[in-house]
Length: 326
Length: 294
Image (cartoon, rainbow over the protein chains, first blue to last red):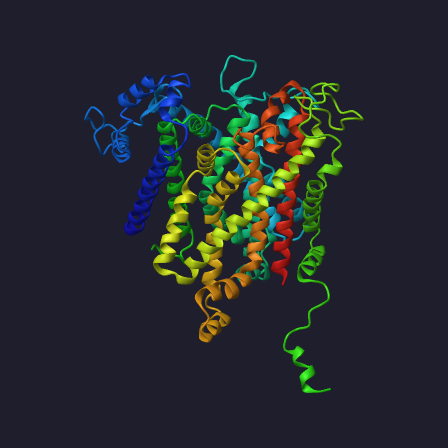
């Protein structure tokens, strides 16, 4: 087991290094120049040159990468990079990345956590109800409905929900259409969270219901379930005590492998509702050529994604004793 | 009756209808698949017939009607914030999605099949290198990748295709690889090796066509994802440049009006895009259901 974790964390480190290097290279050869986007388009050539010298931008690419990592010395000969906990300076927000990234992370975590707390139990209930009798009317209804909600892009869901609840066209205005998390307005923070959470839920509930259903359908055809039925157990007992445990293994790990795509939904949802979150921060920063913020944000996202994959694989092996640690 | 007239018994007689038509006929067993096929067919017809179906140029401003005009006999869905006919823009927008997303899916498939076939067929270090590349791309937050690619190369249809290919091909490669790993052990592959066929022949002629079932289902879904991706790029303001009638871009330009009660401008493209993607995924569900049945 130690070998398993050592190997997987080795891959994690490699992936993070590779990702950060690719990002560095990409920004290096992008047409938008870091100095230009920091000083604005009216900066003179002298100002630009001064900025580059002051920030050590004229030095070779590799030494700047090592400096950022904290392995190489910076312009004034100190080691101050990622390894030392310095995430760099964001010229989009004109502040060290450390000062605002944690707030953003916190906001997004809350959003994702509430959504997840709703999605997890409901997806199991609906998925099991649909999958326990394949082809029944209930199955058909739930399948079609989940197919539709999960095929609707998040921004379309957002616009539709806004139309219904926040525009006053069909119903009186019940909820705010933006979620800036700033108190003091007419809307409480809780009411601001409603529509973003609903948007995320609509998308992921459908996705997970389909997965639980497929897994349930497969388990229900196994011989041991037939045995349970034939020895006279009631149908609810068969479903809950026998089928459910095995049916949840696949969806449970699958959701951990899907965090990467969850990230995209979160960004889009945050953009629709002007939510001050982590995902929108990265996209904003990327549009501004703010290398430091994009690097820090992306690395964090990669860390979460890969770690969740490791946890997913690990729990899969715990839950399914037929698979050994390799 | 001589022996020479009956070798056809060795190869089953083909029915008169061509293969693709028969596959479509199979769909009638799945009502959901039919609904999906209809939705997709509807948008294909709209996209092809755009010049005849729309009564206005999608980029023309009709200031006589005014901006954000409510639906009327002249403008069935009203006009948008720049006094352009909304219905015409939605109709022309279908062309953008329905050209870029199949093209991008096709490119992702070409690259993905290439990587997946090599990895699954040769295994060993080729497999390891290919899969490690895929893992790096897949653990990247895809959206950041899109943003960077669009920023680096600028928004154009070609660059959207490149970006989608880059992100989607590792996923295709994994699917093709798992299929190849299974199919390479079949007798017909052994037979082809015995005949001394070159590796590329075995991969492209023996293995790939036999993996088509799951690939067709996946390509339907993927086309839907690509349509969503194009929408997301447009929505985040990184899609095709205005005034191109692109559904995501249209929503981006007008969703701010929703809270003021002027909902149609954002709602119409949102529903259009959703119905197309729902159609594609229902079609994929239907196809999967049919392929499981045999």
